[in-house]
Amino acid sequence: MKKITPNPPEVPTSSTSDPVDPIPLSETAQRAVSARLRNPSHPDPVSHVFTIVPDIDTPTLLVHASETLASINAMTTDLAFELEGSRRNVALAMQQLTVLAELLVNRALDHLDQPDGAGESQPAVHH
Image (cartoon, rainbow, N blue to C red; front, top):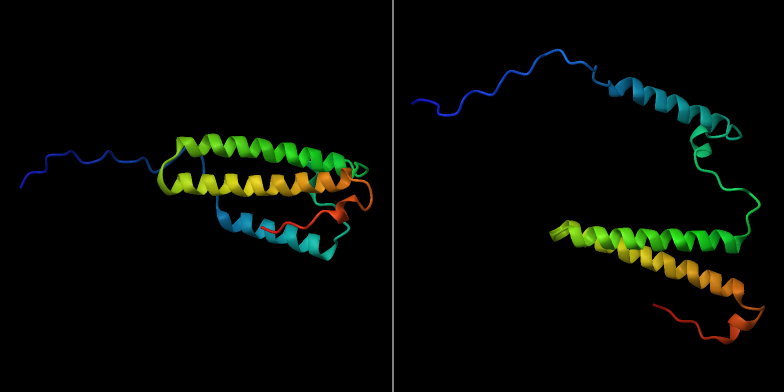
């Protein structure tokens, strides 16, 4: 019986980039983690990529967190409408968790805005 489709072309054995060997990377990561555990006062080099000024007040932090969550909500909603099936369900679940977190942050902001004792007169709502 004759083969109708041609054989796939041979892939050259040498490539322009060398593959990354995961063993040395794993050993490097282990050394970094071990050094960090031995000396916790040594600053984590990755943590300096994104920093938050230490003296920022709580309401400002919560406002920025709320705005970030609102952005994530919009992005995941847009993404969900581009997906189908189980991937769409995952995106919608992420969107719902984001909305829940946004509601929690906004409630915390509301509590900060209330004068002392004003929040105690309102009944607790549990979901």
